[in-house]
Length: 518
Image 1: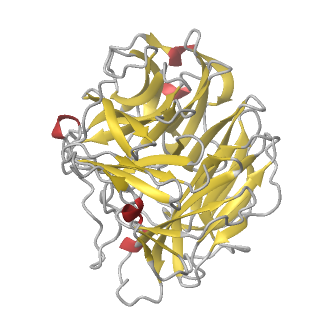
Image 2 (image 1 turned 45 degrees about the vertical axis):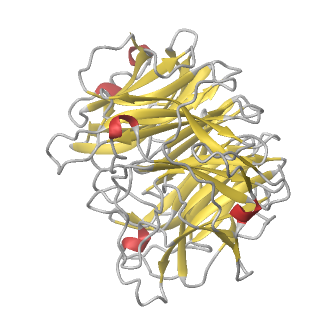
């Protein structure tokens, strides 16, 4: 294989196990070839404990930096009127049954100008290969898509032969191959111009080569950038030959613009939409989060959603779970005021028995409607189980709590064998005098990971990460048994002076968690 060489790479684990009081110097347990200074290779000690292996890319396509998010992003804990962290990144993996799995990174590039001036952002995809023997990622291919305002959800077939991604385009662009949206029964609702200036297109490569010309399909025409609720996702159901497409949408009705989402299912054989899914709103209220998953046991897509509305009444945000063909079920609430909420849903996985496992940030116990969001108790990290029929399997189990610290940035990824990687960030510290701004609601002081089982029981000691993190809305992906991968800017934690690192980063860090029990 002809790999591109990363300009700089490192294999690190600077981590501290909770409760031990000492740092693991795991790099000393790696055997290095000292004679190969230009391209050092290492052999990973099989007796080493769980570790994070990082590869730092010092340049991105065309030398562009990571793109900052839009203003007024709705977060799990607090909004911000400015762009303060990198825009959402998306990941997909394939060839995961080998020692060299592939991870695709879909990201947005460019230095955002002060709006409402034109935003010179663009999309990009990196195709990387993780070598489980050397412990590093290599960039195999990369491509920048200047016509894309942003590059969003991405997916790949298990053998990497098919790759597809969502590209946000300007309204009125005409270089598509097929208008898939026109085949949907509710296409007029998803073609409103009054509140939306952009469209969502699907780019598809059936040769697996992201540097070749993709086929392009229009999937939604009511997409905009104001009030950034929700995200945009792409899932591939190989055995059905369908795509599941989640789109944050903005339409006009009742005298104003409304924010929700759509979940559409496309038949890959002809790129026409089926009648599955929904064309508007996962659940009651404006959509704050919309995480889809495909369940190969049931043959259905399902979604974990969060909105600014609750059927219990009052200023509460609701947590919902729904199957593609059934109404959403509300299973939890949290405080909400204006555009600020106290927690929210994270990711969701389909399990081998047909049930579902989800992660979230929220408040244990019953939450009462109030005129303002109460400072205490702080948020915790919980998991929720749902049956194959979409019914809650008991109450939320709160896995990680701290008496005086908010927890958020929840992550959940499969390690195989009934083990899962749980990730979370330490946010607002109520007893820390130096934590005197709202920035710690938006970026973590620290990132942590721990292995759990499907019941939320911890299987390892929590591990604090050094110089490594992830985006609030990002989703880690499995790289095969005992391995999980993702990408983010290096050193993303909140600084001692309560400032967030620059969101325009020239470097990108590719990370892999490797369990001690593959």
